[in-house]
Image (cartoon, one colour):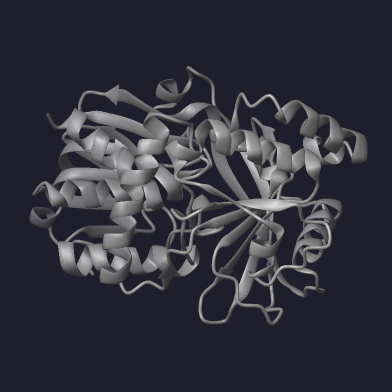
Length: 379
């Protein structure tokens, strides 16, 4: 893997990409598939941003009908092609959204009646939920989707980098801050490169390069809290969510039954809605450890401090769902760009395109979006 060119003649490429998160890697793959030479610049020594701080879940079910759902479906197909080639552990076991009371069940029932055919979902009985090894004392039923793919982000991202470099000849320059792009010149802290086109995929850093491109509609940052817990002696195939998740995902937007669910949560504990807390439980890797989250706090800038009260609520939700005590082995904060719509794609300068996923679903839609962006930019 070439990290630092040693001669000026090597410092040329067709396409320069800023950022080695999933959006940058997706654009690199889309570009090399079209026959272009690519250099990816990453300020850190490895991908450390939002792309490794999530569930490692390609979520098709949660995306809004229309374009976003289509992007997630296209991304799913690319994941299924790329993951085995890159030697990444993964599973395609779908997801199960559990209803824990009649109010949550009503949301799932309405979704299935109105949109089940579009998303290929089906309702599960309490007995069917029990077959997954969950206690069903308070479960009324569930919604099953077969489309979700799971992988371990912190492992998959470095392997994708290695695969793109070794198989497709993508050049990665880590530890390189891109300070300016005025094509064909790309000025970095590691020297100057020359490129014909550039894509800025810098995640929640929308101020360092071409801030004006991200100014309208205005973006902010979303901080979330997550936990990793030891294998509790369960084998979970699908990712698990609860009815609370239906308030977070656009595929459920507009359902009449959501109003009653909001009232129920607000009456029980206003913190649920104030902090954007919902539950996803994902089992990853050969260790069988669980990833649990998450919460959502929005601001122009977000501090590094987590709330023990939020972590405690997340842990209690997971313990209640799984019916056993859990042992936390890691806690962390994720940060991603947030704004209206699912993504932002804008011309930033001649030959330069700014790209950002603006709703925390990069793993779910980045590959499909990159194909769309490359087709438009290089037509």
